[in-house]
Amino acid sequence: MKVPFSPPDITEEEIAEVAKTLRSGWITTGPRTKEFERQIAQFVGTGRAVCLNSATACLEQTLRVMGIGPGDEVITTAYTYTATCSCICHVGATPVLVDTLPGSFDMDPQKVREAVTERTKAVICVDLAGIIYDRYDEIFQIAEEKRELFHPANERQEALGRILVMADAAHAFGAEREGRRCGQIADFTCFSFHAVKNLTTAEGGAVTWSHAVTDVGIDSEELYREYMLLSLHGQSKDALAKTQAGAWEYDIVAPYYKCNMTDIMAAIGLVQLKRYPEILRRREALIRQYDAALEGCPVEVLNHYGESHRSSGHLYLVRVLDKTREECNNMITKMAEAGIATNVHYKPLPMLSAYKNMGFDIQDFPNAYAQFANEITLPLHTCLTDEQVRFVADTLIMEMG
Ligand SMILES: *Cc1c(COP(=O)(O)O)cnc(C)c1O
View 1 (tube, rainbow, N blue to C red):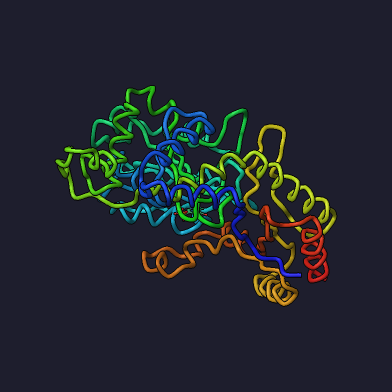
View 2 (cartoon, rainbow, N blue to C red):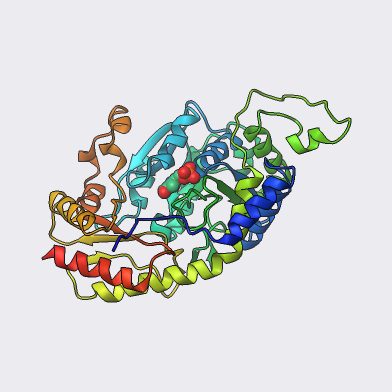
């Protein structure tokens, strides 16, 4: 039995919609992308959504929209994928990494508090594995406490008057906590539709913003227009508007970037979004099967479904108790030999060359290191059968010895 880690779940319906788009005469950003944005905003429960070609682009352009750049500091967690942090580097700001809570994958809020300086402009939280970070309240509280330290550099920062709270929700589209959908909690929330994510457009991402942003007078339509400019060369008209007969003329307001979503991607996304409630249900069923199969084993797993939260069920992280990284790596090899693809989420950023070269040292992140040291991620996707879940769990249990 071959069990891939996370193949895309594509049906004939997505294929038909892509073919229809290809035949429609309009393949780049156009009606399907706009419709996908409308439906995402509706699903998330926010006023507006912007679709770009990745979550990374969404994170990066959000920092730019808020005027965050050189001289500014942005705080994030050491326990994440590089994109949460590289976006900070892309805009020329300085990343400040903090450790996780002891025995947890969650960024330590007290360490965030201690990391705030006069230059801090934003905190990027991560909704790991599809579970909404459960310390947003405390992060917002820190932003309030530190208002005095905050030096706004433009109108939007002045309107907000505090540190910006962002969510890297690449894993968490559709997750909920305390009755709120992911997208309604942080000021700005960035989702990924990369091929391995819950909902895919092959490559793609979306950003939404909460009422906290609009309540202070930051205009949604202006934000939307700014994302459009940033993602399409700073061009005053998009390609569709330009093709209207006689409407050739445009301006370039600044030498901006190119990271728009195409209608081909949106076509996949529209069908995936329609299927998404069923996808979330299936992921929950798979997680409950893993949970039941591993009950009583010397492992620690995440709590995806609780009293006040519902995960999007993106990743099944397992910590194999009392095992070293080397022993876990041997288990990964043994499982691969049995046909099962597993993964590790994540090797903490301070262990990667890019961040070591910036001066980060894993010694300063002992909790993140301990989380990584015995972590194995099991396959979790909607092409997985019940039988495969049993096989994966049985093989893991056998290899644990
Ligand atoms: C996948 C992922 C990203 C990047 O998403 P892209 O759409 O590929 O840019 C960012 N953060 C986390 C935690 C991810 O897993």
